[in-house]
Length: 81
Image (tube, rainbow, N blue to C red; front, side, top):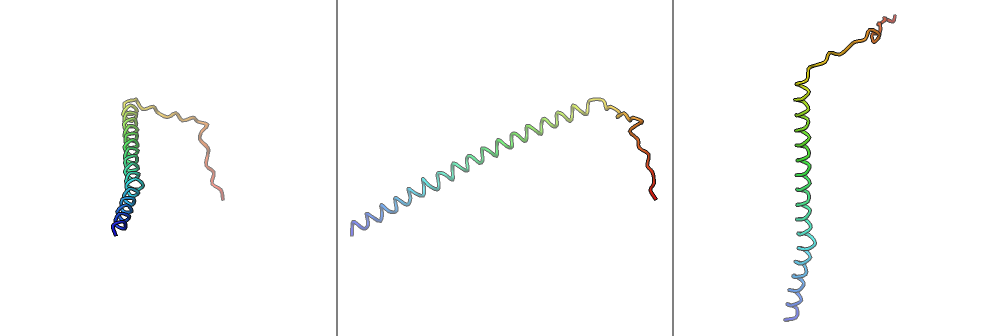
């Protein structure tokens, strides 16, 4: 009877080993990597937003240029009957 108990305990230890090293540790590593990638992406988006705001403020301080209209750009409209 003692051998069956030993075999059962070894089987349970094997299952725990497989659970930890093939499920828990990879999931933890993946979670950590995904969090890092989201943080990097968030930082990039924040940097782009800051650059766009700086460009907007720069463009707002520049004097507005009036668009030039050429006389030959105008095409007469003819009503078709």
